[in-house]
Length: 67
Image (cartoon, rainbow, N blue to C red; front, side, top):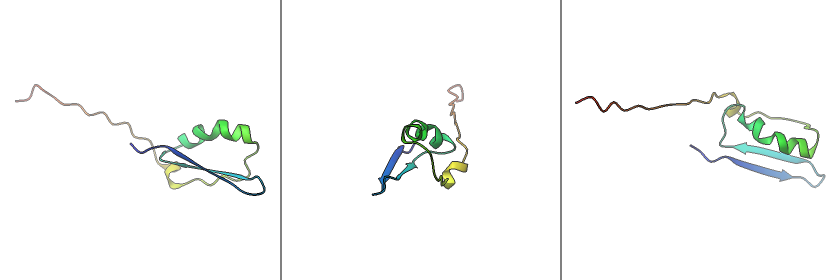
């Protein structure tokens, strides 16, 4: 599992850019929602390829009854 990271860039005019790394699917929107709500109106949103990936839950099971 990769580490979730937020990268903030603040321009001289006060514009803030937030980049989310290490997250798949729409989880990035959940992570940044409270930040966006606090900062104000979102002027632009660029979705990375990871946004369109589906989150896969994998369960591995080992059968100990086999000889």
